[in-house]
Amino acid sequence: MATRIPTLTSLRAFEAVARFRSFRKAADEMHVTHAAVSHQIKTLEQAVGIQLFVRNSRSVELTPAGAQYYPSIREHIQGIMDATQRLQVPDEANVLRVQSYNSFNTMWLQPRLAEFLQDNPTIRVRIISSFEDGNYDIHRFDVGVFNAPPFDPRYDYRFLFETDIFPVCAPGWAGAQEGPANLALLDTAELLSVPNTGNVADWDCWLRHVGRSPEKMAYGPVFDHYPLVREAVLNGKGIGIARAPFVARDLAIGRLIKPFQQTVPEPLPWFVATKKEGKPDPSIALFVDWLIAEMESDPTVRITQTTA
Image (cartoon, rainbow, N blue to C red; front, side, top):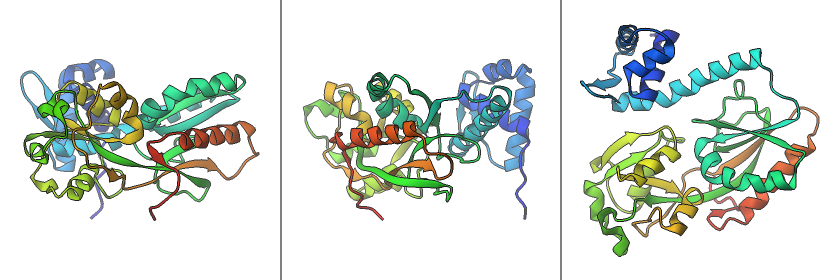
């Protein structure tokens, strides 16, 4: 049976309500009434046959199914908006476009980028953040950094790094400041996460490594990206899984704590992607060389690939 594709209007309403956690704010953004947005969400839920929101008098929350659906819908709605904007306002010439996940851009690249720009004042860089692996027909980029993406034959891929994952928490969670916490504390903790990368969930990977059953854990909200998980953890909303290079600064200054000693290799390695066709661009080669050199100096990553 063919999959019935929901209407774009209903998907746009879903994306706005999920982003704002509010029907009223979504209606204001879309310049329609609250009732119109509510009708579109009802239409969408009927079309997919699944409840996407839990509504009460004061708030709107995504159901587990809605939380799973949201990142992909947001990514594609944003892609349509970006494609339309490019038609109306073409990309600037002589700008190096670098795309990766919000987590990599915010928590690793941004703190280091000023040094590259200072050393290369003639190069302008535009950072493009996404929630999922790059869609090579929608997102136009010169350099992409992805976590084992769908490999596109039009691009060259160079291994960049591997790293470890482990839980992090706010200071004081379950007495974490007093030394390594007992794994039994996980049984009553709310575990925060992002949508899976590949076929293996981060929590599943780590929990099985330490001998805990993922099916018996209590899971909290699923967020678009790791910076949102980090903020929730800092606000005491639960504990999250972190990639070592993205939280190194927070751990060093004590904003976050690693409550358990156990670390696990991240399930998938990271690659840098560049397009095969076209005239060689010295600025692309310069940026990629700088990126690799920065990785080589980062003690939280491994620059020799060990996974298949």
